[in-house]
Image 1 (spheres, helix red, strand yellow):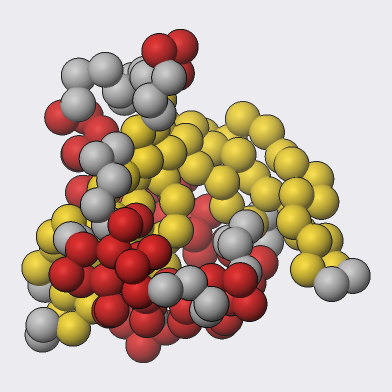
Image 2 (image 1 turned 90 degrees about the vertical axis):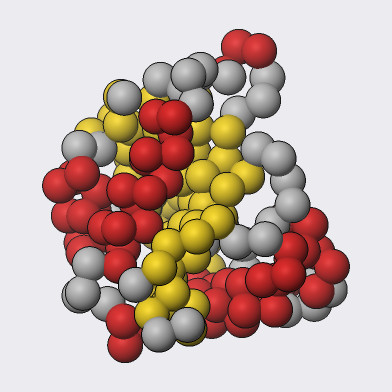
Amino acid sequence: MVIKILEPEDALIYREIRLEALKSVPEAFSSSYEEEKEYSLETFENRLNFEHFFTFGAFVEDELAGVVTLILETKPKTKHRANVVAMYVYPDKRKCGIGRILMTEAIKKAKDIKEIEQVYLTVTSSNLPAKNLYHSIGFKTYGIDNRGLKIEDTYFDDELMVLVL
C-alpha cells in the first residue's frame, strides 16, 4: 500500500471516490451526492490545490482505496487547530487497516506543523466502526450534536471528537 497526498492531477479518481462515498453513506457527510455530482472536475482539482488542505489517498495495487482530508484552520485565533474530514474507504477494502493508516498519516502531518495543537473530527454517532477507530487512535468525545444532520425526514446525531497532540 502507498499513501500519498493527492494533487490536482488526481482529481478524476478523487471525484469518483468522493461521489461513491456521498452516495453510499449519505449520513456520514454534510455534503450530498446530489449537489456534488454537478461539480466540475475543476472544482475537485481546486480542492486538491488549497495550501491548507491535505487529502491523503491510500493506493492498493495502484488503485485508490481510501481517502481522508486534513484541513488546517487559517484564522489567527484558531491556527492551533486542524480538522479531519471526508474519511472514506471503499467497502471491499475495509477491515485491512487502510482507515487507520490514513488517519495516522493525517495526524502525523498535523504534528509536523508546529502551530497545530489539536485535531477535531465529527462522526455519525451510529457509525460504530469509525468511532472505535478514532477512539483507538486517541480521539476523545467532547460533545454530541443532536440531530446534526437531516436527510429527508430522518435525523442523525454527530459525535464531536478531539485529539490533543
